[in-house]
Image (cartoon, rainbow, N blue to C red):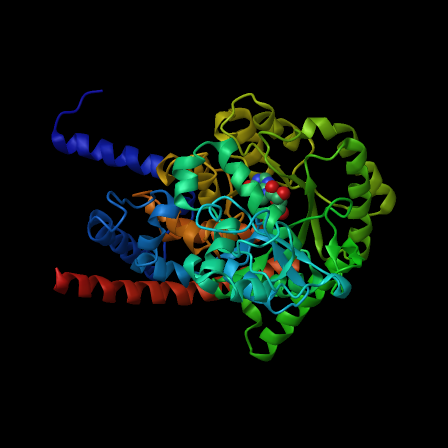
Length: 542
Ligand SMILES: O=c1[nH]cnc2c1ncn2[C@@H]1O[C@H](CO)[C@@H](O)[C@H]1O
C-alpha cells in the first residue's frame, strides 16, 4: 500500500476504522437520534473525565486504581463515580442468569432471619480472636421442641462446640471484644461473601476460590430454604431488581429435594418443589399487583424460573429431576422456562456424563405434551479441550437455547458461527468471572470479542450477594469502564437483547420492549442533563 500524502493516509485510516467499527452492534443500529448521540457523547465524556480524576489518584488501601480493575478492590471507588450513578438509572431489561439463593444482600437475609425464633446458629468451637477467622457459622431452623435458650454465648470459653443458640440471642451475646453484635454481623457476612484478600491472595486460583464460593452456599442454604424466609427473599430479590431498573427476572432455582429440601415454617415438615414454585408465583403476582396499584406496572413484566439441579448427581438421579421438572411445567407452564445443571464445571460431571437421560428428555416432554428448552451452563472455565470446555459441544448439540457463561466460547470459531446462526445468546457474567478468577480484570474478559464478532450477549450478575454486586449496575459499569469504544448505545442494545432472548412469550416481549423503549428515552434525557451538569462542575473545580 502506498499513500501520496498524509491526507490520503488519514482518509484510508478513517475508512478502515469505520469499516471495522461498523461490525459492532451499536453501529449496526444505524443513525442515532439527536438525543441518543448526545447522551452517548456525554457519558463518554464523563467516563474520560473520571478516568483522569478519581481513577488516576491513589485511594487509601488502593494504591493503583484503574477503571475495570478487580471489582472487590475497586468497588469503593466505583460507587463514588458519576458514571455509576447514571448507570443506576438505566433501564436494564431482563436478568437472565442469576442463582436465586445468591441474589439478595446479606444484611437483608440476616435481618430477616433474626425475626424467626426457629433460626439457630452454632459453631464447631468457641469463637475467639484466633478461631473467628476460620470457623464458619452453621444455621438451622429448629422445631419448637428442639429450641434452646442459648444461655452460653458462642464467644464464651465455656461454649460447648456445636450447641445451638437462637440467632437473635447469639448476636446479642457476642463478645464485645470481638465487636459485639456488629462483630457477629461481620462474622456472618464474611462467611456469605468473598473478600478481596480471598479472591486476589489466599484463594487466587479458579478451583481454590470455588471452594470458598461453595462454602457460602453451604452456610446460607438452611436460611434460604426455610419457607417463610424464602418467600421474603424472593420478594426482596424482585423488588431490589426493579429498583435497579430490571424489569424481568429469570433466576435459576437449585432444586435438590432429595438432598437439600425446603423446610416449612414449623421447621420440621419438608416442602416439595411444587409448593416452592407456587409460593414464587404468589410473590411475583403480589408484586405485580402492588405496582399496578401504584401505576408502575411497566417497571416489572414478570419472572420465570430455570429449573436447575447440580452436576454431581448420578444419571439415574437426574431422571427423577427431569420428571419433576416436567410435572412442574405441566402445572406452572407460565413459570418453568428451562432446565439446567449447575455447580463448578471444572470439578463436577460434564454434560456428556448425563447424555442418556438428557437425550431422553425430549421424548419425555413429547409424551407429557410440554416443551422445556435446555439453558445450559457451559465452559465457565479457562480450559481448552477440558471437559468443562467440551461442555460447549454437548450444550449446542442438545439444542441449548442460551449458554450460561460460555467463557471459553471465543476459542471455538465453528461454535461462534453456530451461536450466531441459531441465535444462541450468551449469558455473560463479567464480575462473577473476574472474582472466580477466570480473568484478572475487565480488560482481559472475552466479552468485547463476543460482542464485536456479532454474538448476542445478555449481561448478567450470577451471584450478586456473594460478590457484593447487587443488581446489574455494577456489571454494566465494568463493561463501560474497560473500553474506549463501547458506549451507552451498546449497553442499550444488550438490555434490549436481554428481553428479546428471554423466555417471555411473544406478547410479553412486545410489552417489555415497548416499556423499555419509553424508559430508555427518559433515561437518555436524564443521562445527558445529569452528565452535562457534572462536566460543567468538574470544569470549574479543576
Ligand atoms: O457461576 C456459577 N456456575 C455454576 N454453578 C453456579 C454458579 N454460581 C452458583 N452456582 C451453583 O448454584 C448453586 C446455588 O444455587 C450452588 O450449587 C452453586 O454451586
